Length: 180
Image 1 (cartoon, one colour):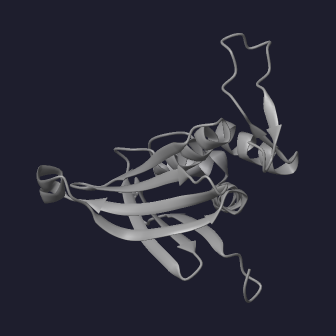
Image 2 (cartoon, rainbow, N blue to C red; image 1 turned 120 degrees about the vertical axis):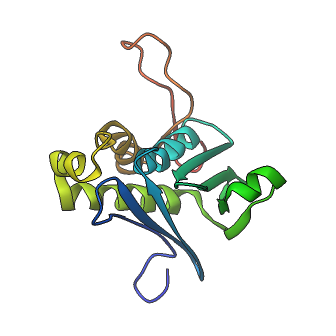
């Protein structure tokens, strides 16, 4: 960390127009600003992508759909235990040409990213509450379950190592942070 701030940050805000969001990803000196519309669930998408990584996935993608186009946040675990974060813009021409504009390509600590996503998600909850989020977002509920999983992983210093079985009475397997 430098200057009292984290090297990894996620800020997420609801725009004045219902159903539109803006998010900023900051990793060290690199940053990207993305927007998304109600046709997706961007806040849920980021939280869920991180939950997938916590559960052992090697890569996950969060989607910020635009009209037209799409921002993607591509997350890939590295052998070093770090996380590669690539933010791309895909417009209609990029889809046809199989190309994307890279807005951010950086590595950070996995735990730092988990914390940043949890903090950014919780800041939205603190600002709007669940009901206010639903009204302001105008589409999906606040990702309460995903935030709880992120906070459980951080607070208990544990990471989900695998998806739970179909049996809800059988809890998921856990592995200590740094080993998962």
